[in-house]
Image (cartoon, helix red, strand yellow):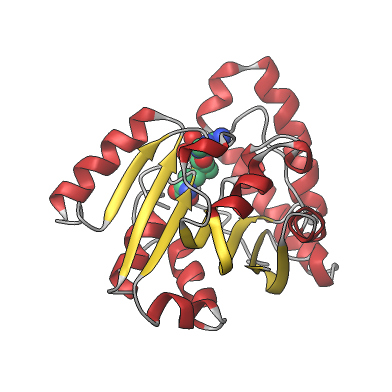
Length: 241
Ligand SMILES: C[S@@+](CC[C@H](N)C(=O)[O-])C[C@H]1O[C@@H](n2cnc3c(N)ncnc32)[C@H](O)[C@@H]1O
């Protein structure tokens, strides 16, 4: 899968989720300011600009390299007026004013924050969202036993072999949907809707042999698990109260 492609399967999943929830009314009902956290090259935000013509996106990313690539993509696609890239750490509250955004999208980023519940990130997300605004999490499902076990193995492996950092960051932590509910219900949000998904993951063509084997195990375990344990990914929507 090309992670930079705004029409990849992950972007399709997010768009589909948003269309079936209260988020769709917010995003399509008038001018809307969206913040894309840990945006990388901004595939989700760029896709949502296509879906929602009155949207303006701000993307925040701690690494300068993907942001340079994003700037080039925005110039190529004529999106510079609708997408503002900001290089910053989402652990710092002062990077945005309070109540600045109607919608915050956290795509595949919160699992990069160790000890999320003790970090400043949930408080910052609450601070930057206006009252009545919404927040969506799209992340791996840490309740899935294979996802959890493979992350622990990879955590040790990445500490021993730095060459693995191109596939995984050492500090990654797979959080469960219940963990996210605990974090955000204690930080100014109410839970609107959510589910786990992707019971069947690609086994061939992943580009990393071990990833194919892990996905095979996730698929096998999906046949015998249920509820929030099942599925490699999770999507959920929250509203700021
Ligand atoms: C798995 S990548 C996902 C990138 C993009 N959202 C996507 O799905 O294609 C996680 C991104 O979050 C960024 N990130 C991690 N910690 C961050 C922080 N504290 N502040 C801002 N960005 C962060 C990483 O640099 C990385 O680009």
